View 1 (spheres, one colour):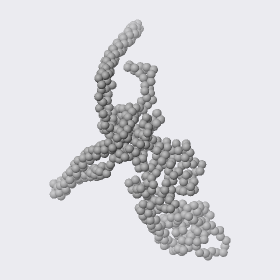
View 2: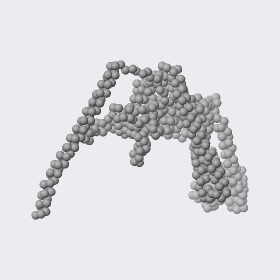
View 3: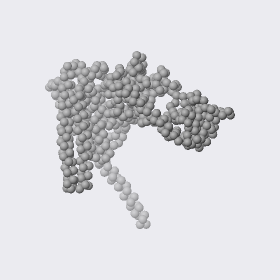
View 4: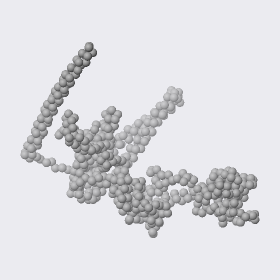
Amino acid sequence: MCAYSVFNTFPVYPLSAKPLILLAFCRYRYHTSLFDRPNWKRMIAAIEAGEVSHVLVKDLSRVGRDYLQVGFYTEVMFREHGVRFVAIANGVDSDKRESSEFAPFLNIMNEWYVRDSSRKIKSVLRAKGMSGIHTNSIGIYGYKKDPNDKNHWIVDDEAAEVVRRIYRMAIEGKGPYEIARILASEKVERPSYYLAQRGLGKHKTNYNPDEPYTWRGGTVADILSKPEYIGHTVNFRTYKESYKDKHSKMTPKEDLVIFENTQEAIIDKETWERVQTLRKTIRRTDTIGTANPLTGLMFCADCGAKMYNHRGKAGNARDWAGRPTGKKRPDRDEYNCSRYDLGNQHFDDYCTTHLIRTAVVNELLLEAIKEVCDYAQNNEAEFMAQVCSASEDRQAKAAKAIRQRKQRSEKRTDELSRLIRKLYEDNVNGRLSDKLFEQMLHDFEAELEGLTDSITQDQQELDRISRETVNAEKFLALVKKYTDFSELTPAMINEFVEKILVHQAEGKGASRTQEVEIFFNFIGKVEIPRKEIELTEEEKAALAEQERRRAKKAEYNRRYMEKKRRQWKEQQEREKEQQEALELPAASTEKGERIA
């Protein structure tokens, strides 16, 4: 039996007149650099089954272009199975040992051809990608290729509306998997099915038509992370180590090549950036079943740590003595400093509790948003001037602190450089041993490296501050989006609020006060001018009476608790005496029995 690489591409080979069974194994549409070609695997299976006695190919390149693999098959496997191998154009015949001496060099040249082709193709693709042209064969979900310019993307209105909705749901605080469940329940076609139905994408001939609406969280997360939706071109997302590598690897974010504003944006930049910020914070559902939208926005004002949310269903209320009253306590929903929790775990005082109820924060947020939006709409010029002035003050203070730190680091860097030079001089002159020299040099170099990194970071921060401008116009545009401020929604929180700083409470009971700072997106912290309200004599008298009643009630509660504690103590003493009285006769009886 003879097996052929490509049946009709080599000249007629003189065969003996006896009957032969010829079987052609074609490589149609498969690269010879690959050895997972279907017909190649079929031929190897036939050889292993003992059904093949001869293998004929036009030349060695038709077997493959990997010299190690080709050498294994032609020099090892075929010989083990008694198969005669003939490469016609190269004059290679396994039965003639001298004809195979140059075969390894031919295999190396065949592989070099693939390497060279791969290098040239990569070079062309690299040049194309670096010029700002999309390297994708098709547009991503939400875009399609311009019929008049194949290198330009235009918006696919039907898919783009789904993308916009996904971003809106993300702003509302929904996670990728929750969004995927919503889209699946509403029977929205998933991207691969949508593209396949239009003859586009890698899934056009390989997709499951029975699951057109099976959205996955990973698909939604991928859509939420693509800068292409704000009008950018992103090239070289994946790469391969070698042409032999079948698996693509993801390019690190810092190595991506991005060209800005190359096509019409589907999502505005502010929304996209806000979604990226929201996705950095993990919002886990708890026993209530939903995640708190404030998580990731609240920070301790003293140590800067994030605040943890604690929620739980109501339990049974108890009185001052710890006895159940039959009533229910209110549901628990509060925040405290995460370093306070950490300190409790390690039996140390890392920070104080900074405890605050979620309902109080929501009330303060809604009130602050109402006040700022009302002031911005009714006093637009004053608002713009105030915001810009406050921003300049904050930037000046931050820049001053960073410059001072940078100057200290640079001064210490100069000192370390002089010390290192002095170390070398002392070591050369014999005043410092090699062991001590190496130890001190290692310490100085480690400190110098840390200072160099710190100086670089400080300079980057100074550059960022110098470029940063507060965009009051964007905040005003955001204000105009909302007409109803009667209820605080997750979308409102995520669009308006940048962060919330919570200070430690002061005082106790009715006199407890706690400072909360609210920073808004685009404008930061804004102090709204408030007119001082002068109280009338009647209002002053009412406040004084209220304070007198509060003090009277506090005194009554104090005397009441003292009385209850006294009664409780007396009751415990009576119960103890009764117990002792019961135990005494029993002890006497037991003693009498022992004597008898």
